Length: 120
View 1 (tube, rainbow, N blue to C red):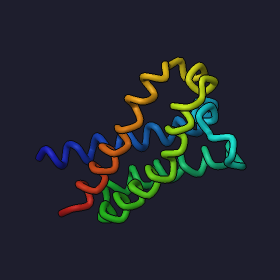
View 2: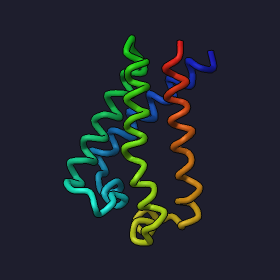
View 3: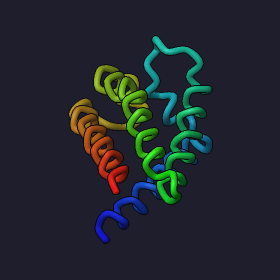
View 4: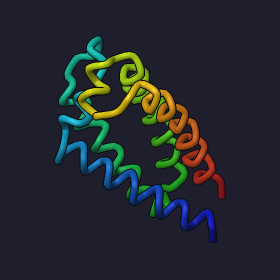
């Protein structure tokens, strides 16, 4: 039962954040590393996949969606690194460097939860 609740919460979280990529792209643009190109397009693409995989967690494609989320979380991790190293990004998100550092390891927890949700 705990696993099912966790999967529903993850689905809601990813769908909600995915939608925010479209409704508030500036938030995500603020943490895009400058060495990447097509910032807005990447924000929209990552948002699309968060929505897709979020809904996928609720279907027979849960395992595939879980692995998609793992890959997505790895792909967007450079934004967390940039946030740690960029005062400009920290100001844009109204957080401190310390909060950015604390926030980054949560990606590992999210990766683990995605993996855990892929196991029957």
